[in-house]
Image (tube, rainbow, N blue to C red; front, side):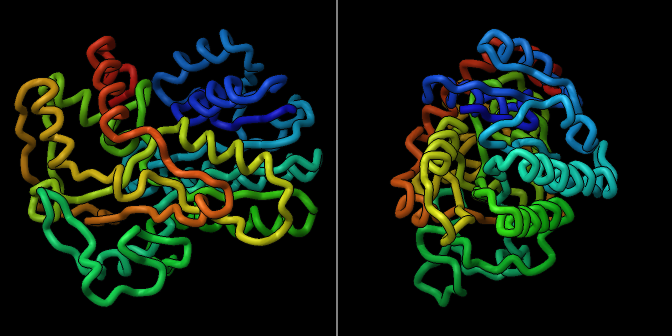
Length: 355
């Protein structure tokens, strides 16, 4: 089997390549990456040692696909993953659309040309921000938790959000590019007869993740806490109670592997993937963990809210478990431990990450 991974020198793309090579005998992986992200050269060298064939290219350019061989599957792991992209930082709104939407059309045309299946990595941030802000929450152990004794709208339960939860605007410029890419991917698959699987991912984290405040927040927080860099609890009373679920890219790899293996036609094509309730954490809880692992370091409180911030989002993965027997297996404590160990061994990691 041959697989192409876009954005292969990113944390998720490189982690998936490593996992799938361990998982599947006789697998050949090609990768394409524009190496724009600081630190990506580190992963390029690692991938070459694993036998991955690397192509330096930009998937926003259709001609950069011309040198790639026909493959059986494409994993699209290339994107600008910051929810603030297009508003601040190094990417304009036009660049965001080119990275996250125009590029997907090029990927789909490539899949069409060689009848390759597509595994599209999407995001939990396709869900409606007003609907999330309206959910009934309670304070629980320094974190926000869903109050499941109150009335809940469709698509949310004590287990978290299902794919039935509202995707009504606004969902952020970033979220809208991902939601639009989901729609066009499904249409291409239907029109041209190739399989498409879409996985809406919660927060991914693990050792070797590039850490900045906008991308790779868990890695950033642990590295910055270890080195007593300034940290801030932004918005929501400045207490750090905002809560998300976290999972490891090896667990994502197991889901993708199961989707590749199935021959099912039709039916559910979009799944939520995350750590669920057992792997949920607040920033305050992460700080408390770091205080115990390293030494106490108190984040500052910043009461000024940011666009698109939300207090709570946990993914319900019941459908992935039902259809593929999948659930996240790597415990939250193990994810934190491996990031902390990596941080201790790499004192300049934030600088390499471009933080």
